[in-house]
Amino acid sequence: MSNTGRSKKLASFNCDENLWLEFRHRCQEQGTTATATLTSFIQLYLDGSLDNLDVNPLDKRFDQQVRASVDAYLATRLDSLHSLVTALSEKVAFLEGLETATQLPRSNKKAAIAKKEPEFWFIQQRVKHLGLEISANQRMKIEMWANESYKERHGQIPKKQPFRGTQASAYPTADLDLLDATIKGVVAQGHS
Image (cartoon, rainbow, N blue to C red):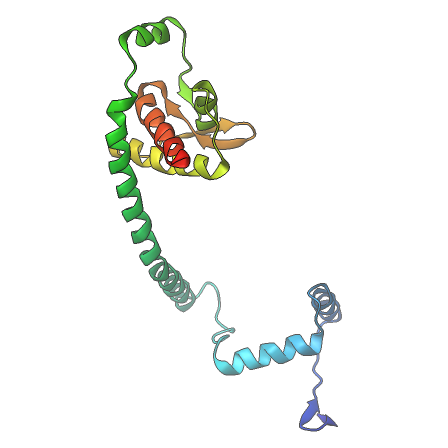
């Protein structure tokens, strides 16, 4: 090491040439320098943030560390998950109240039976069929609440099917009462 200025030392070490070139290139891509990156790395290592770098990934200690990290991450997410479940429960209660209001009159039921309905319905498809318009935010609420209602009825959320280049929840025709009640509930909330 040699002096390079006030309280700074020039450090040199042996490194594979290709590895060093790739490292410098990556630093440049990230808008930094090799010196700044290595200095940050040294500080993180000294702070204990990068402990056990020499652990073999096949070693059991490494597996335990990964599990502990995942458990810690999940523990931080439990509070927000609990809040989401509470909000969903409130929405389900709201939708159950709307369910009786969305029953089709007998004459409309016969017309629906006479006209061959698809086996599955997607939210956007059903909204259009009902002559309504919704925002992207409303579509997300509908899917979340309809999936929760479906899960209460069947013990699982509806299966995903290809729809317009993506995967979307597919609601069987037999469960249109859930989907329609949810759509109408969300649309009614948007207009109030």
